[in-house]
Amino acid sequence: MAIRFYNTLTRKKEPFHPLEEGKVRLYTCGPTVYNQAHIGNFRTFLFEDVLKRFLTVRGHQVLHVMNITDVDDKTIRRSREEQVSLTELTTRYTNRFFADLKRLRIRPADRYPRATEHIGDMIATIQKLVERGYAYPTDDGSVYFSIQAFPGYGKLARLNLDQMQSTERIQSDDYTKDAPMDFALWKGWKPEDGAVAWDSPWGKGRPGWHIECSVMSTKYLGEEFDIHCGGVDNIFPHHENEIAQAECASGQGFARYWLHSEHLLIEGGKMSKSRGNFYRLDDVLKEGYPPEAIRYVLLNGHYRSKLNFSWDRLREATQVVKRVAGFYRRLMEIDPAYRPPEQLPLTPVGEAFLDALDDDLDVPEALAVFFDWMRKTNQELDHSQLSAEEVRRRLDTLFLVNEIMDWLPSETRTAIPVDVQELVEQRQQARTETDWAKADTLRERIRALGWEVKDTPKGPVVTPR
Image 1 (cartoon, one colour):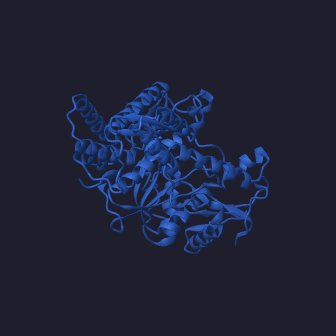
Image 2: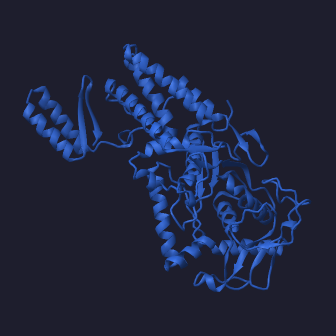
Image 3: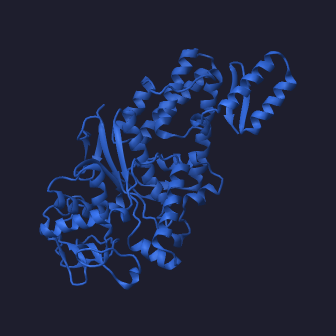
């Protein structure tokens, strides 16, 4: 089946054809680093992680860029509240973001450009927009984009400018009105900005949020690239404004496919601090739930449908990932020497799993394929109906699925150190010679190095403690 994605720009599923065969250029909106990201943010980041993994498994080379917004209204306001420099604040929360990505096994982007490192590029783009008549400076040293100068404005969010005329300007980075307004590309310095300012042709100031993504995406991916992702809350105004800036600056197209993930609900409602249901990753982990279960909960739904998070669902997810881990260990006990090949073969079940993902990344359908297969395989194992070769094929399938879902226990991704392997071999030799005291001593030495060894009919199985 050909890959198809629902393109927000056209409001329909379309066959996916990258600009360059076999290569995909992907841009995803990253965090604004004024605080820790919440689990709603990670619903989007995990959808993007699965998208990238899927495209890679399907044979594409993916160049992934995710921005770090380290200067905007929110970061400046928070640095002022905490009485720390903008750099100190944003470095702290950028590091926390990277730590959270690692805990949720989200594969890193190829580049994480930071807005403050690209001010010169932004000024050059704004100058180009002014020269071409798409932007205009004001007396306070700011520069605004004129939405009336761009006939295509509103095509992503489906705004009708004829019915929504507006002569207002908006300087705030974060606005949610549906009425289109001229928006700030460059913000003239104000006292509340403190030391946060850069020189420009219009005086001291700083960039607006929207120009940051337009400039950083095209700098690293080219003026036209394949896929742009984000949450549905980014469609307007942020992504709409990105399109306007980028297309007016380049005179050509911008992102060809726009994929947006829906909101995460908490116990059926909106997440908010006032309701006491505003959760960050730390809040969930401290309750004792494993990262694999959190990953499963946030992926167990179609990305274009609202997803409900609840503690009951998280408890269920914990049991699910335990069953998957038990299934993995059951297969490994039969073939403890198995190691996934660098290029995993595509089994019929693996193909069915990927076929489901071909249809607009339909994770629920793909998981239905997987769990039906796992149930049938367990029945075959119960009746000893699988040959050694068939067990190996089952493991190939399991690791193919895990290449995208990444929910297996940590030992599947952890190489056993050479010194531990040597101790395991010495212990196995001691057992062969019935030197049980030496075998017990070696087991304790292996444990002291952070590993457990389990004896099976097929040989020792070594796992992290």
